Length: 271
Figure (cartoon, one colour):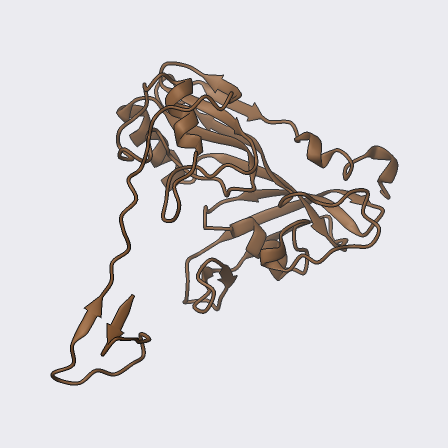
């Protein structure tokens, strides 16, 4: 908080010579990185890396705001502290992130060498990353490709938005229709070629298909759903990549969580 003559000022306020500004810095919260047993489920694990099926409701690592238990705390317990240190104390082994409400596959590195090599795979886009989303609406096409840059919303900093070419950052999502359902929604498989914040959520919203439960990006309740979405209905379902150390081809899948079951019941399919 910044004050001028005892009053808070905005970032647009012009100041003059002789003005005295007072800065109030928030108290720094120490990060408690003690291991926490979160009963994490590993889809794949060896001495170099681990792939976790992350539950929804869990952020990947500590950040700004009130301290809370994160996936990083659970990884410290699961791996007995044997994690890469490249990400720093607060991000042990963390190579990439999933949103709090997104469940499914996420990779962590146990050694610094594996971390660097995994980072290269992500940077070169050499991984296959596919998500399943339950989205409002019924696409007329069976598949499509979205190439729209994404930027942070300047007035709502917690949100991202599609922007014009030449602005923001490149973002590319391919999607495929997996099923149409009674109640006015669809199951979509989304493959991301870039890893922008909220990418799938923003891209599907731009097509007019907000993800069920995602009130941040335009979802409003549908009247004939089989259940009320308790979260953003997005799941990291498939990862395929070459093991950075052994060269083994890894093809990993995470089944849909139980919360998805009422929405993908075969008796509700229209196609």
